Amino acid sequence: MVKLSQQAKTARPQTLGPRGDVCEMLYVNESTVHAVAAHMPDTDVLDTAVDMLKLLSDPTRVRIVLALARAELCVCDLAALLGLSISAVSHQLRILRHLGWVTFRKEGRLAYYSLQDPRPAQILEYMLALVTGEDEAAHGGRNASISIKEGST
Image (tube, rainbow, N blue to C red; front, side, top):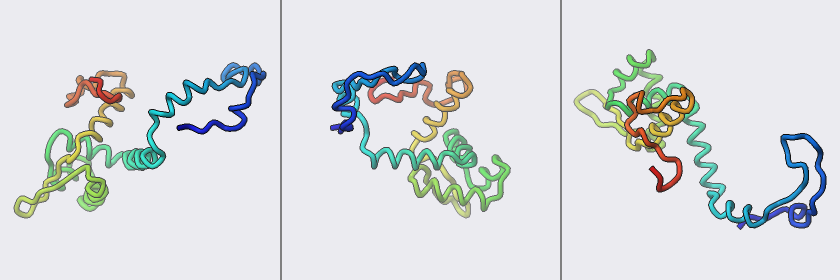
């Protein structure tokens, strides 16, 4: 349940000013606020989501996730693809592995990485579609109908 501020509870309509980009009077629709609040995630969940988004704010990690959405690749393949050192790629893979987003398997002396969870790549593909204004299916996205709302496709 959302707690309305004392000011919001006792507020009578009052003029706030003619700025155009804000309400011109103070009025809180308590029933709507409570209905929306019932569907808002807990603060801990939001904090975790924000931390995950921060991890995706690194272009190298984004490129790694998008590459692994297309194919399982060894560290050497990723380094060549991204034009980075093996050490730099390994560092980013450790971060992604710690999150549980990627996993690896050894084949002889090679370590092959793949996505353990496809959702980060789907989020990135959705964001790229927003940026480019194109349907992600045009870019070969695996999930052309990504749904942000639960239960809708």
